[in-house]
Length: 93
Image (cartoon, rainbow, N blue to C red; front, side, top):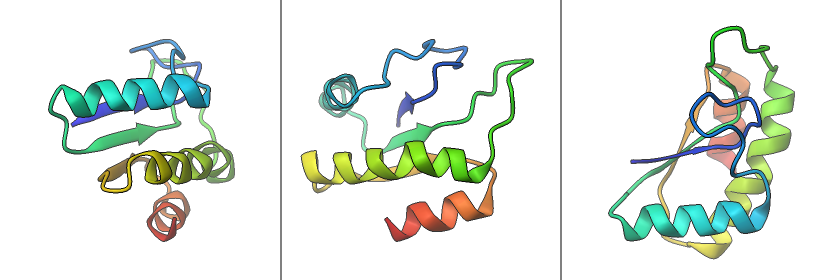
């Protein structure tokens, strides 16, 4: 599984993947390195991070899901969220 954090507040990568070109390049790298699933998160789990609501997550996640499904039609995506609304909408996407 490859991890793609799309928040500037990530403790792991500090927001390295926030525009379309960066996201495509990183996903391609992870797939070439053997990842069979790309896990996308738009909520920082860094200690002290500000909690974002489902509507904000969806604003970030839905365009990325569409982008990745266009660039990599066979990609398997998982979503790192604890909001049911986010999970449901991402499944639909």
